[in-house]
Image 1 (cartoon, rainbow, N blue to C red):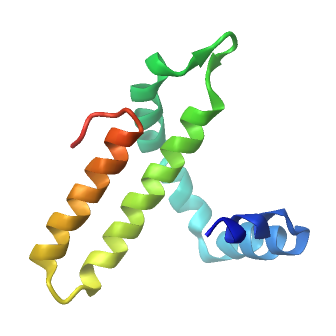
Image 2: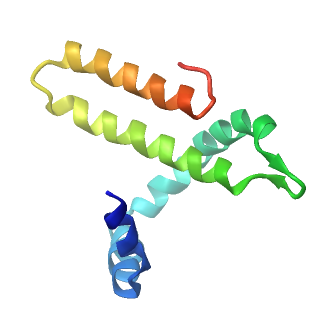
Length: 106
């Protein structure tokens, strides 16, 4: 998984896959629509992560990663063969992610 993150350092991958591709597909608008949720998550973390200049950059990154994890879970659930079972599992995993980030569970 971390190797996949390294691909973001390649200028061609960054431009075509991570910038232009999402723009063509309209994903940029979707990401902008997430900003209120990201700010809410970051606001919950701010009391814990201040440095001399204000909120830590880690707060913003963590908020984006949490939103991405929840979105992926939402995309997964419609395709499971046991929605009731997997919904409970996904909820538990999201709760674990939130707690490990120092946030209250849902």
